[in-house]
Length: 59
Image (cartoon, rainbow, N blue to C red):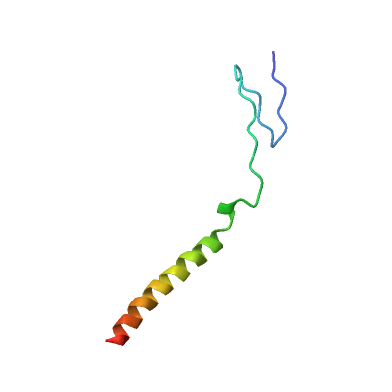
């Protein structure tokens, strides 16, 4: 017996699988914006560096 061909982009059925398909998370999650987090890290680094520069210039 031949198996029917699976169209491109679809997953063929697995034998003995009882699991259901998982739901994909929607776009726009908090980790989908790396430039925001990078900006916060850079801003924090500049503030800390500025603190030490001001302490050096204050002496």
